[in-house]
Image (cartoon, rainbow, N blue to C red; front, side, top):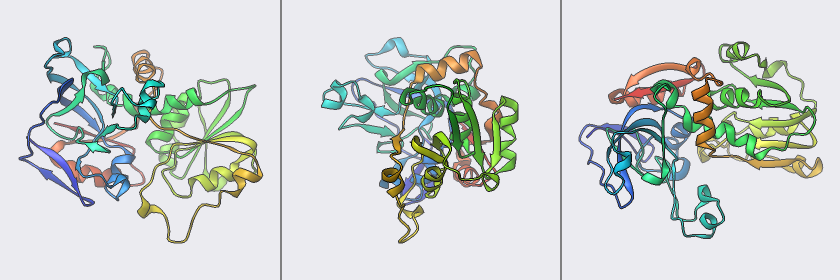
Amino acid sequence: MRALVLEKQHVRFDANHADPAPRPGEVVIRPTRMGVCATDLELCKGYMDFRGVLGHEFVGIVEQAPGNKQWLGKRVVGSINCVCGKCDMCKAGLREHCRQRTVLGIAGRDGCFADRFTLPAANLYEIPDHVDDDRAVFVEPLAAAFQVLRQLTIEGRPYITVLGDGRLGLLCAQVVSKLNATVRCIGKHPRKLELCEKWGVKHRPLEDVGLRQDQDIVIDATGSPTGLTTAMQMVRPRGTIVLKTTISPSQHLPGAGVDISPLVIHEINLIGSRCGPFPDAIDALSQESIDVVSLISRRLKLADGVEALKLADQGDVLKVLLEP
């Protein structure tokens, strides 16, 4: 089969990759649409020291389901964390933090940028017929945006800044705009920020924003090593920063560590935020309450995957989708 493979920070298209062999409890999925994520780009720069087939955002058809025939032929998305179900984290209901987990296309498990891949049946969610593939492929990143709502306590009508106008930042901006809050999105790319006008979300270029430590909540979705520093300059004392950014070690400038003393001095709450609730994301797409189609910049074939990754890394590009 065909696959997009990462080896020692080098990506190549493999036209003769070995077919996946499902383990007990797993199914084989044929992806019909795949999304390039900022995490994929960071993996190519050394993040997580991953080697194997890339990709974790997908919608596809279950082609093999030994022992789980109820899934055969279903159109699905899937949680990317594959867990043991036995460790202390799993038993405590924190399966995303399983001690033994593998993560689709990120850690210890081949991903979805291939003709076929495997995933535990327990990770699957069926997609309603009226949600097309272009929307369904956004379930995983949209779920990550919804995770922010699970982690915040909203009191009064807070001022919330989403820092970053990339793929995840614009999803977060839409999600938190549904709250009883004053929301703005801050970024560096005017063409991306213009999308906020469609959604009624306030937006401004970073260069025009005064760093006055007056925001109740700042969500760092910059994907930049400087994002946290900027967030600390925006949030008020005893405010909250939600950190969505993950970057490879190569992105850190030598000797330029982040000064986290403001966290102590101003008693700022710092919350790490990762994967989120798939049912909430599927429901939002089903109701068309979140616009994801406007984020699609380009569609390329799997065989052009190397080019797709390069394209997705350009500053003015949002979502790049892969098709078989």
